[in-house]
Amino acid sequence: MIDTAILSVATLLLAVLSIPIAFFFLECVAGSWPAKRRQRVEMTIRPPVAILVPAHNESAGIADTLRNIRAQMRDGDRLVVVADNCDDDTAQVARAEGAEVVERADKERRGKGYALDAGIQHLRQSPPRVVVFVDADCRLAADALDSLAAAAFSSNRPVQARNLQIAPTDAGLNLAVAEFAFLVKNQVRPLGLARLGLPCLMTGTGMALPWSLLEDASLASGHQVEDMKFGLDLARAGHGPLFCPDALVTSLFPYSKEGADTQRQRWEGGHLSIMRYAIGRLLSPSSWTRGNYAALLLDVTIPPLTLLVFVTLAIVPFAAIIAFLGIGLLPLLLAAANVALLSVAVAASWLAHGRAVLPARSLAQVPLYAASKFKLYPKTLLAGNAVAWVRTDRTRQD
Image (tube, rainbow, N blue to C red):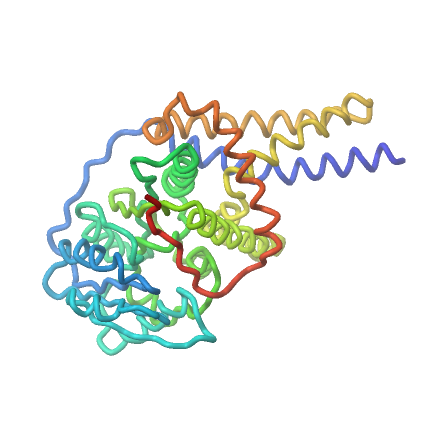
């Protein structure tokens, strides 16, 4: 009786784990498979757009961001900065750079979502055809603004740019691995979904939406991953976001260890909380009647890459013990299949996209990095879902 219970529980847990791993495998293989190079269509005529930049104490770097954006703006475009609960001169710097500025002070309702909502309310006075969202620490690559505006306007759907975070040139292995994980999440997987005819998640910056989809949007939230939740809501309403690889938006990882740890804990804590929401929605039969929505819910259930690798490998010894004791072989077969799928997915992503980011000579040190990072998860889980806007420390340590 006990053996049967152990076998049933182990098999069920491994079968459940195989679902996000299998979906991760499909995304990565599709996103890494060689494809004919698309001819880029240049957009010579597009409607005026509004670029909305939420900012919290960003006076040190926001001027460079605004100049980068203005270099791609056309006649009729508007640049709007929401200075949210700032204790510095972010608002003054933004005005000096020619931006419209909305100042917001509400210590109880803090967070990026509230800032975005304030910007939308400001734009209601004279609505644009398309709104593009760019974070205050990001840079647009050449023609990114035109590509986003054109895609959102022509499709009348939300559009997500290729949003990458770049390690500084003098960074160590930790940030190189983090950059590769970020690339898998925000380039390989969305590209795979696009090739499979599916929408992608929103990633918080480099987003473009037609005004018609923002009129009734609910953005006023302090959730850590309000962008992912917003993308899910749009897909549920029949407006799954499109991935636009031609539009590139980049930002730098924090230089300091404290800044990197704070950022990682915020992102992954938010990811774990939205995973719980997605799993709950997947248990509702109504979610499966909307294919695009169900696909994005499955995408959300994929844990952060380091955690996914650790859990997949850690469960193998337990499955082997069950097989060795003669209880059953099925858990070990499932565990081996999960390891194989995950290995192929990561290898394909690295070969197709990641060799410049993470050189082959560094691969042997990756397990040590993963082990050190995993120590953050207990603290992340215990911290819960913080709702305050936490600015990442980007101070360079000399």
